[in-house]
Length: 164
Image (cartoon, rainbow, N blue to C red; front, side):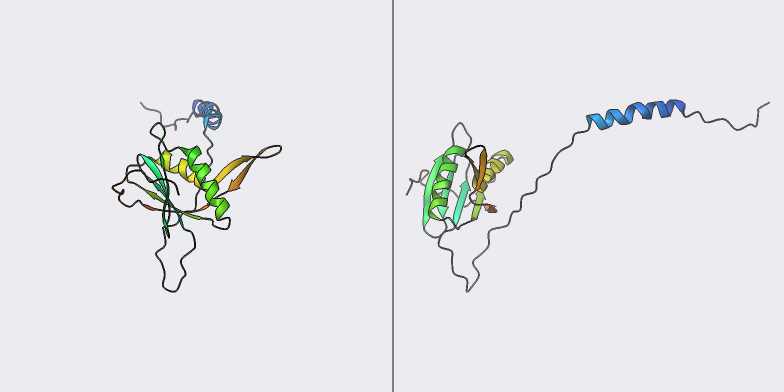
């Protein structure tokens, strides 16, 4: 005959597992910091608005970075170094542009479809700011923090455009 007594639930083993598992999971958890960048799409000209004196376009291509002024045309073409954008040359050129137009904060980053995410982020970081060595520490100096993103136009027939 069977006994009709209710079976006892033994949760001691389960509680021991939780006591070990919870601290282990907390210790091994990866705490990551999420950074959000504010981006906009390039704006079309609105009737009645005066065009800006200078409108920087940074065109990231698979073999070079082209710098243009939307109003006057090409400024420079910087070939890639080792298959990646030459970030130092780009930073130096952007600093010279910022010296000529200190009040300008907007830049448009135009991308070809096959550009890697890593290259996009690297170029955006260079366009946004530059690290300058101060008296006691490195200082971040703002260049063109208001970045818009769009598709790059088709590459011109002439690959290299000289500096102006």
